[in-house]
Image 1 (cartoon, one colour):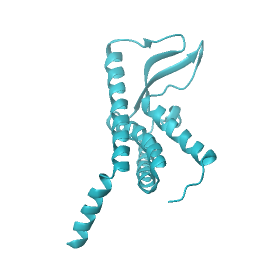
Image 2 (cartoon, one colour):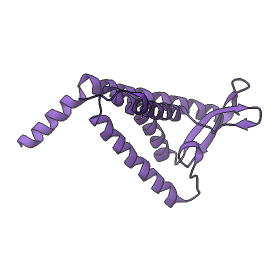
Image 3 (cartoon, helix red, strand yellow):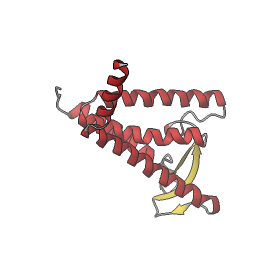
Image 4 (cartoon, helix red, strand yellow):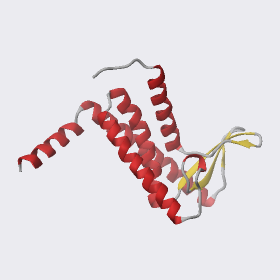
Length: 171
């Protein structure tokens, strides 16, 4: 009984430590922003066509069954389910890294985790990820992406930058 009581006590105190609470709020905020943006674009494009912003950016809904930038998009349930399972395992690993990291890394992993959870949710609910941000110049179009992809990419770039250019920190 003492082991169970200690587990709950440690889990509860871990969650409400200031740094972990901040990271949790980051994850929830990114997930919510991603969900709201996707719901808005899906609702809009049920009745309308793409949204023209300017000569370089439009919002145009596409459904991505692959991973980032439409890579590995296949029409096979086995491949789709395998990729989804791998993404789920990566999310669990990111949570582990977030727990074991120092504060700045926790924040950066939170950016990645919030976006990854947003896209993972879509894979489970819609069986595809709605991408809608279309950046282009004349007839050249970059890969279509969403808000979650922005946070995942930013978090990963900052983690790489921190590792390459940051000072080594000791606990």
